[in-house]
Length: 162
Ligand SMILES: O=C1C[C@@](O)(C(=O)O)C[C@@H](O)[C@@H]1O
View (cartoon, helix red, strand yellow):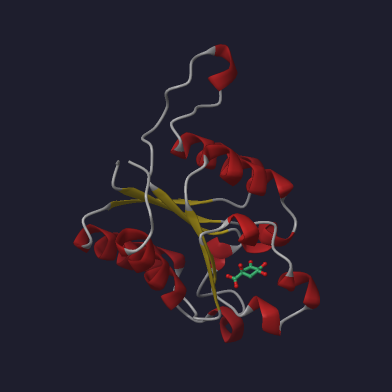
């Protein structure tokens, strides 16, 4: 087992702490990532972090997490270190992206879906997720503590691949 956890944040989550603070709070993404890194290390794992506003870049990063590079079809496949679990807040892509869903299903790495806000208490389109039925667990409405809970769960309680 690689003992690496990958934390992915999707579109607009680079604005965490600045964007709609009444919904998402005042903690910034660098603060979240720094805290997550220290927490993960304390649990005996390494943390990799990735944020992108672009769907394709997130698909690429998920594939890389399985050790597959963009040239996998031509046999030049090894690229990056495998990770044992993914924690993903896909932002709005949660509600729209079959591609992110397919990437997560394709790499077969167990993942936790996180949302800072309670998506069920907001606009009805946020109540549907393309990821939830593939996730091991879904966390929402805990603010940025959701990331802490997800890491603790992934490191201590999730069945990780050898
Ligand atoms: O960008 C986001 C953030 C979010 O994933 C959350 O963390 O609460 C909820 C999504 O509906 C929204 O598009």
